Each structure stands twice: as C-alpha cells, then as structure tokens.
Length: 385
Image (cartoon, rainbow, N blue to C red):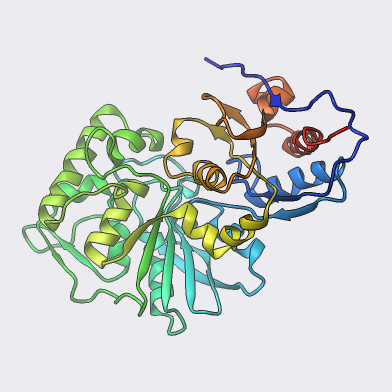
C-alpha cells in the first residue's frame, strides 16, 4: 500500500523573491534508479536551486555507495579519469564494458557493467553468475599500470558467491570427479575442491570490495533470503541457494562475516578466496570524489535517492552523509523519489517527488521537471526576510 507522506520544508511562507546571504551548498545525491542518474539528479536540483538563489556557491558531487553509478560519480568529479574498455565473453555472447583508471594507479570497476541484473534478458536465479564481471577484474588486475582496484558490487543479478568472477580470474572449481562445475549458484552443490594455481594475482596495493549492505552471506539476513527474491528466486530456489552457499563456505573453510552477502555473496568469494579487503562503499567513494574534504566548508548539504526506506541507513549514501553532516553540524536537505520512513531530524528541508507530482507513478515521469521544482523549494526554505 502506498504511504502518502507530506513535503516538509522550513520557512515556506517567506517570499521567493527575497535573497539571504550567500551560502556554500553541496548537492550529493545517489541515482534515482530507473529514472535518473546521480549526475542528472545533482544537475537538476542545482538548476532549481539557482533559479531562487543564483548567488550561492553550488558544488555538484554525484554520489554512489558501491553500486551502479559509481563510475559516473567518480568521472563527474575527476578530470583525470582514463576510461578503459574490455571485451566480455560470457557464455558465447560478446559485448564490452567500461572501467576507469586514475593517474595514481587506482582502477575502479563495476559489477553492474559485466554481470548486472539489467543485462539479463530474463531472470535466472540458479544459473545467473558473475563471470562477465570477472572479465573486467582480470583486465584491470592484469594491467601493469594498476596498483590498486576498487570494486563496486551493486546491481548484481546473481547469487553465486562470486564463483563466476573467480573462474574468470583463473580459479578452478571442481566436482568429485575433478570436472569443473557449471557457472551459477545452482551448481555449487557439486563443488568438491578448488584450485588457485592459475589465479591472477592481486595488484601490489590490493583490491577493495565496496559494499552497500552489511548483510552476511548466510542466514535469514543473508544474500539468498534477502536479495535472491529480487532476482526472481522462488521459495524453493532460495532454499537451494542457501544450502549451496553454506556448502561453499564449508569447502572454503572461512567464516561468513558482515558484508559478505553483498552482490549475491560476491564479496565473500573475492575476500575469502582472492584476498580482497572489504569496505563500505559510501565513505570510499566520498574520499575518491573529494566530498569528504569539500564538506568541511559547506553550509548546507543536499542528498537523496530513489526511495528512502530502512535500508537507506544501512550502508547507503543517504545514511552515511546524514551521519557525517550530523557530526559536522551541517543542515541537510533530503530529496527522494518516495519514502516509507520518516526523514532524519537534522533536515532543513525534506521532500519527495511523489508528493510534488501527486503520486509515485507520476513522480517517476518527467523527473527533470520534478527535481527542478524540488531544488527551487529547497532554496526557498533558506530565504530570510
């Protein structure tokens, strides 16, 4: 059932033609998935704001938390990005994907570019895998210029614990007859032993897996039970995947920890078998894009995402920036597509496109127009007589 919640802004009664003192405003939203990229959201809110307060110092810093839009967020802020292209060979299909290389030797790769759910022609909960993503990882890890890799794991369409990606990196996964098992989480029940003899080594400064969830691999809050339904899994398929992932953990012999359930358990595979480290994506990307330093001189911060819900404060951009702003005593404006929970209490303005447009469905149409209105409404809330 759709919950209708009001727009909440302070000082709405102050005339819009009055101007307050110049402020430094950082606009740092995530993407509104399926409707607008993080770059577009930041741009349109900024344009709306400038229509009311044209003399403010506006800094657009599109953000991501380790999912889709990570490459866009970094490229929007770093003029020194060197785009790279890699051919993907995935079960006979061939296409290409992008990753980026920064001058200091840092590579950033996105799982969604090679194994994202949006790339699937149809849902395949047991057969979907991360082999395409592994192609990108192999290209980056094999590049002599690369010293360190950041992996953005959001947008996964599989629950294979990263076995597909590891296969592309040279790991071998065998059954009892020493035949390589098929790709996909449904085949993990056949796993008997693993060989890393031909595995591509980590770059000199290692690999950091950026995650946007604290979920473990197994259990009621794990990758199969929580996220597999979003990837088309039935109750029986969820049970199969949970059992198979548990079997993999027994073979690997390394404990399942918080965050390991990200991207259908890809975080588990890359950290426990390849030796990558794990990090919350939001602070890592905030550091790469310079937001962590820029916010120190900000008067106001605006952030948002497609839907504000309980997961928004569990490793996501909105939650991270909300806490950071609270520590620095910076007022926050929230602009989201829709919401199912209350806005945080440190908001100077809080609104939804759902309320601006009149319904959730209308809010997903003409998003540019709604975000322009949102930016203007936020600016009006700051005006002092």
